[in-house]
Length: 429
Image (cartoon, rainbow, N blue to C red):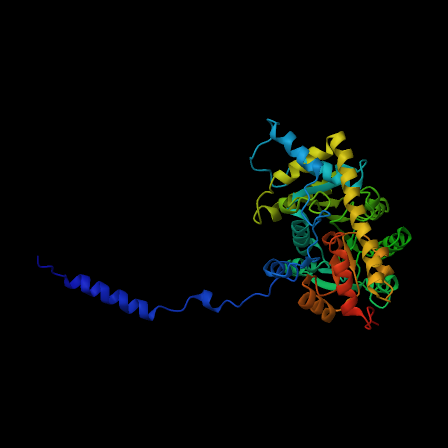
């Protein structure tokens, strides 16, 4: 059978061929490669490492004595209760989240006697989301668009607040010459801050240093900030991990509120409830009256709605279920203390093993620090060496997550630290 091809079809093929050769380069071709995240990038390298002795002391996530993730038994029990509760659903939450959860979260942070009538509070995507929403609020409504953050601080703070359009200014916090709090430097820098500027404070278990002010120092900081009329923004990611007592760890926040500060608070339940993947937190504002509360809430909702509309509900339902059940609440507090105590025991054991390894350095700063992390004093070259030679993965500022240590690997880590620090300074002037 003879097949004929129409002239119009040939013209169409020719046109398509011509188009394929002259099509412009896609805009995607010019997108540059972004730098890997300083922490998550290290975690990816750990996963790729084939060394059987590798140790991950980078990520701030709790691990049990076998190096495995641990779901709190109180969390598991709460999920069982939720499964049998006919009122639980997968419906959308409101823009501000689960009100019953928010109430319990606020009481957990501020105390059971917190005045909810003047507390503007919303559910957020963990502490990161709380910081971002808070930063957007500050950028929109505060006259001084400067936020003072400690040096050092959690690395994401800088990116979050810069993305919000705030000018990030560092205040001195840690003294590497003494491996301790630079209290005088902190006060001097806050004194120099302009009236109305925002000051970010870690509520407890400072990340990355594990170095917190004493109660007396917190009182001095509060008085100075009040005198300077600065706005306080607390970030609370480790309540319960500092002392092992979530109530005691609430001291700084509660003291500032008692002293009349209109604080803001970014709160996360990732660490202390082990709800890392649930993205469960709150953002709250202490206002002066019910009218202020409603106006703040109205504007925060306007920020949230086009950003992510409403928060996920599973993690918040877990926290609500635990904190509204007297038996589970008691169990949770015991589990939180257990995690903090295991981390504390790793501090002591690491220092003991460093001495056994032959180190003559003074490592007492490790045992005097609190929370999930130890700020070792190792510099970036030492950190690079310990990773390349011993497959121990950590951030390049010398921070290690003590939750990644256990009785099976702590001696290995101690020997490696001794190897890269022997004969070298772990303090810098």
